[in-house]
Length: 159
Image (cartoon, rainbow, N blue to C red; front, side, top):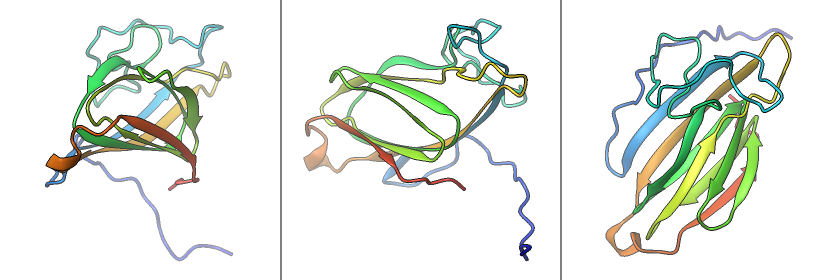
């Protein structure tokens, strides 16, 4: 059965403009090359690699693309992976790998330090695709100092 809909890509400004309670909304799409035995990219990041015209970006990563340990406080993040892999570690002692339709909900509350890295797990010629979107949601004043927490869900939010 064929679809009656013609789905085509659109160009989305990133980060996107937001209104309260949303602080930040971003869509990431990268086509990384095959990783090496340590799941690293063939090039080093410069610490601020955000060129939207590049085939892939290292973001703040050095050899593995992503966002090394950094703090958050007073809001929540929701990360929905469409394609690819994300490794999460945090100051609560949590660590996990999620991707390909999984969702992570993190409440920073009174403060958390975490990292989100994109290991290049595939060593095949077609490389590693990463597509995900992330929302930052402001917590109400009464909830800004709640205990930090994070959960990963296998919800298949594939678009």
